[in-house]
Image (cartoon, rainbow, N blue to C red; front, side, top):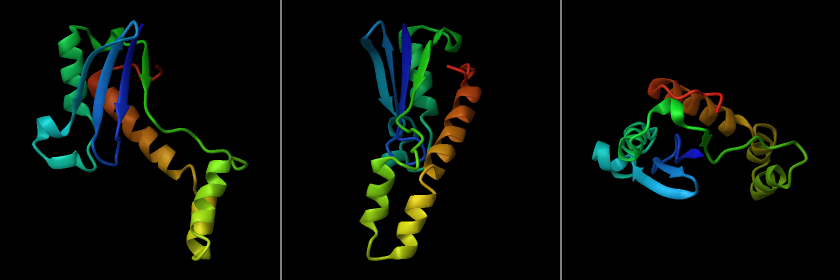
Length: 124
């Protein structure tokens, strides 16, 4: 099984790692290719290409693509945690509570675009 892991999408320190049958084959941070510290706001495009080259595989051979964001349900303790963090500013608390999935959808769109640009099936 070939797993591509993506991290830092849209935030900073974008990176990619490639595992084949549970063994780490390659990992790289985007900043090393762009020569831009933390590569803020960048997707791990070059890092992903590097990992694929190191492993000698084609994009269509990837079985799973993983990235560290998930939808947050309305009853989730995580959503309440973020709202409670802003108890001193009710407007920020309400924003954190009601728009908990905004970050997920923004990152999801960017990851899907990255996969399409690299020729990786986005249904994985």
